[in-house]
Image (cartoon, rainbow, N blue to C red; front, side, top):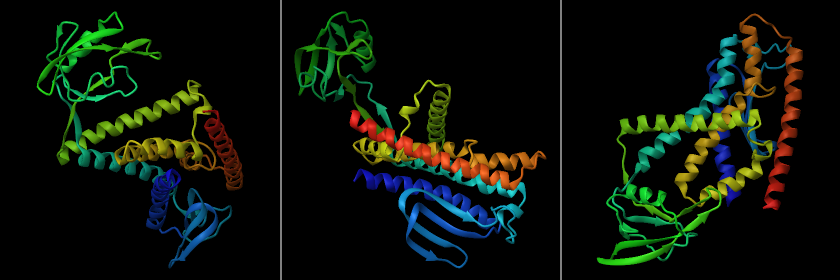
Length: 339
């Protein structure tokens, strides 16, 4: 099931990306020979009036075959006959569609789901099941005192918890209308090198109006962008190991883990992957959109690069990309067996 969900998510992201290239190419009257989802042998093909629409066997990637990108092409209205501006728009349209898709997902999720607002009252809304307090304290308990310290608001719990110097705390709670004393053992967190209680506050859901959803989704979208840019920066600077990069196999596991949190988490993961794929395609690497854009920009500033050299440059890049995909997939499989 996780594989099917992953294929569906990646299929939507890739389709939207390629749709950007397709629609802008059509707008500038470039002849489009094929719009294809997937790679490898053709499973299904529909012959349109001017374009062939195909679904291929390997559910990774996709492409739009625009005529006139070849060296010395003489196709009327072909890609290379168009102005640098038009070629730039066609090349960057896929990335922009990925970014737009991500924003629409974020906006739709916030508009539909609303926002979680923390209850200020010191009432337990959830428990960490691996904590030692689980079962001793329960969801719905109202905390009145901790070690003799009066608790009026949830933030008072953090204040008291920060000052603890023992592995046990005495709670005075209200449960089902009764006042009860409970001695609670704390749980040690090795990563933080600290003890914690294992309780979480109550949350209520407040719906956004349309205007508020637009504003909040811009902020949330900006945070996603910042997080992804930070990840790319850490990868380039060596702060994050290349072994931590996930390919198709790794994404299946990520999607599987996310699906445990429900559809809402999957939607946010789709937005995250869409931005990631957009950024990846913007990299100035041969065969990627970013690599092709570099040559268009060089032409704009008056540096004309031989088309034969450019084509070979992108061909080498394609071979390297396939090699990287194989290596990353192999690494994903090793990580699965090493867990």
